[in-house]
Length: 636
Image (cartoon, rainbow, N blue to C red):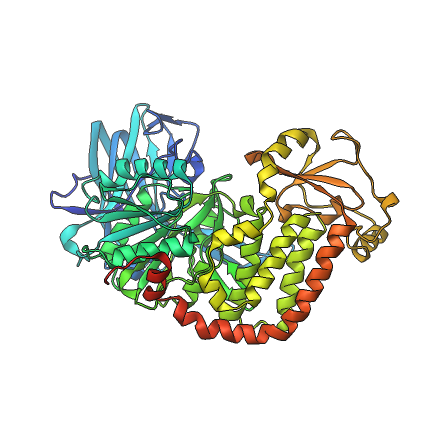
């Protein structure tokens, strides 16, 4: 342990700020435990921009946004020593800790290994500061020995009039070699999300573009697939109209614009439009890339946190296995220190999703463009071809609505199954035989059929038909033509919601207790579709005990809830969306017989289709392909 008795002024030479200390921001995220932990003698003031501390007030920064990812900085960058500056007023004991996860050799009563945190005091200092001032509280802290874990600050007040205003980790600019050619192009693909995009543009302008430290290093390309935004090029923000070719077409258009630009970009960031984020994410990423050793071979992925539960992580990278795509570090509650440490552990990552993914532009050759999936699976396929060392860091993340909010759409179900079949041919072909391909189809079919979603079944059948037409059909397919062929079930969702929703009857618990005999009867009758009509309960109105209101999203629905009921109302109260579904033997068996006929064709054609899709992939992932598809021409 090293103890500093006096704090010093920040160095006069230029510095590189590695990361700022963040405060909760009600406009972005107000979950305090993602930023600070405090006892009852600390209070936020000035709209969360200041912390007031009384005597014995304790503020701990062992949090998702304010821990310092020391192991990643040590391993991947030139940084070997760090310094910390704080802006404070009052009397303080300030401590710097290193923390890492350890596992006991002993086990508890249920034989589960006990996780513990190994906490080590790195440095400590005592400060008396009458007036508000910025000062270097720790300087030149060596980090070479920290192969894992995090560094964090603990701030304890010894007076009743202490104030904490913020701070940052930094290094002297001249201390390490820099990647001075760093210039990042950000591609955001959007389709009729005007409110999200305008809000994000305003936020980017005020917190990034207008910051002199970054305004010359970030350029935003907003690819407008819906052509609903005003086209313009100013303030490092370019809005470019594009044909409705989905995420694959939007991001490909962005790559064409970037590689054809007179500006020399070093990196690209793919990011979603309907997200929100801390501007600090871009700033920390920039500082990391400025100091990274192997700048042309490292890509950095952002985690997705859930917008409805901002403390919960949906995914932090994914791997491609024989079972398909497997997301990493899912459902982690990032308010907990243990999970922050787990989140920092490095694993093999095959790809990061495109809600936020940064990669070197030098890796984008003329044959390294996305496959034309439209949406769903494009990032998986791209990741299977993308050769780089893929890493993540705590705090590099965005918030996004859970994807299940779109699962009810016919188009989503069509694209999910069609693209899963294409992926089974392109990257999972070693693990997929005809039987497994059929299992995928039938599982998708029955998950909808047993819940009376007969109209969406048409989308499932169309997905099989289009897959069997082969890669050349997919290459030329206009998604607007697909939409015209699919049932438009979603157009009545708003009207149905207000007509049928009763809050007291809403069930979003997928668990269901039933007798063994009922369960067997339900399964052998296709969830009641083989039963005579007099055994089906027909509710008179929404108040009838046989009228049930269930979660719209199929993973949250147990088929036992639906058994022997004539009508069901599936809804999502958060987005005022609902669909009334009605039992029909005729619709069920007509769709089932069509599926059987298609399955016979599938059995004879699947092996050949797998070969065809792999054979023609290289033709559909080139610059020339996308220039022709999008009707643009840019010289690289």
